Image (cartoon, rainbow, N blue to C red; front, side, top):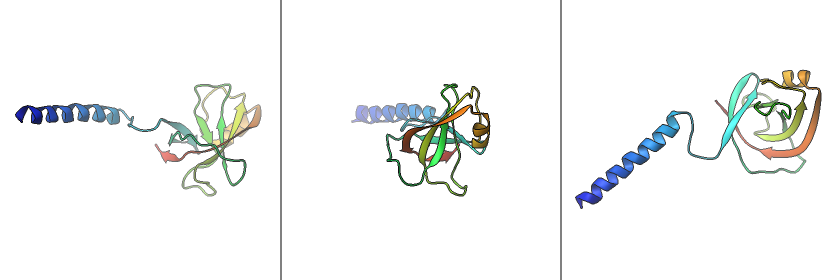
Length: 127
């Protein structure tokens, strides 16, 4: 009985160390996520496998085909008027090669803006 108790305690300690270290470095156990910028502020998001039809309200999220390391930029965010709760229309902003953090800068700097036809849902969470 004592061996079973010690095994249970050891298992709990190892699991606690694993979860604690994952959460301590800013990662969490759960769905994959990434950073999206809006209004010069970083937001976290949870990647969800969704696809929406091309109808209903959406906000624009810009992606950068000429900058693979750049995070996406949104024209909307929680707490701002007109935010549609994470329903997105994806627009490719060409000609941008460095990270921008607001939609106005994206529109001003892009050599072209192309609606990709992709619509999806994912929440923005303040980082």
